[in-house]
Amino acid sequence: MTEQATVAAVYDRRFTPGAHRAPLQRSSGFTLLELLAVITIIAILAGIVIGVGPRASGAGKTARAKAELTALSVALEAYKLAYGDYPRTDDELQLHRALLGQRGPASEAAITGRVLLETARFNMVGDVLLDPWERPYVYTYKITVPWNNSSYVLYSIGPDGSDSPALLAGGFPDVASAANADNIYANRF
Image (tube, rainbow, N blue to C red; front, side):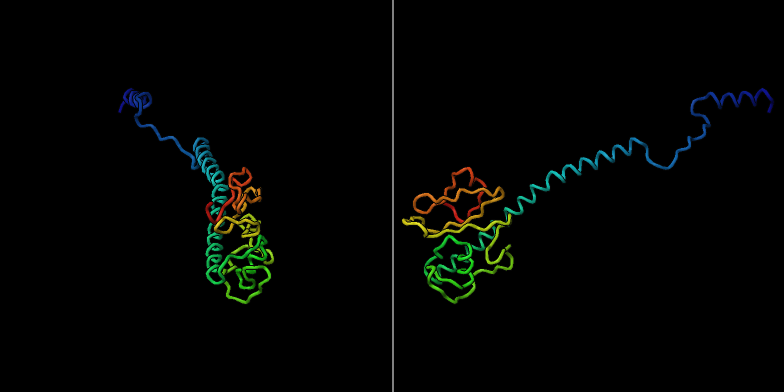
């Protein structure tokens, strides 16, 4: 090859687009843009999880309270079948004793009966049954006269912990009170 042909070949390679170029060397690693995209995705997912967490916890506690109230209601119905009436009290300790077969419907009647409630799955302090928010369940039956309510009043005061415990005439709870808006009742009124 002549010198002029060699110069022409080198010139053609240099200035012809895409002709015989050496590929650029790429370092192993991530670009700044890729890292920012991954961090953004992780931040969005963390925000979703953190935002849903408290609501899921609250819904779980409400579901547990409903299940425990159902178990207490079943035990109270079994008590009524065995003794002819519900326990007459507004004391949580007396309710617990009645459902464990240690107390009859009237406070003076001591009995030794069968256990109607399995307390192992309940939160308890001493002999008092607690709701998922660590407050005693509220129970009332025939402590006022006249008692026109055909059933007992049993509920959890709910997550806010505020309660307007006054019974309306005839033994019905004040479900319309703003303080009772989040109460969870075992029975409907």
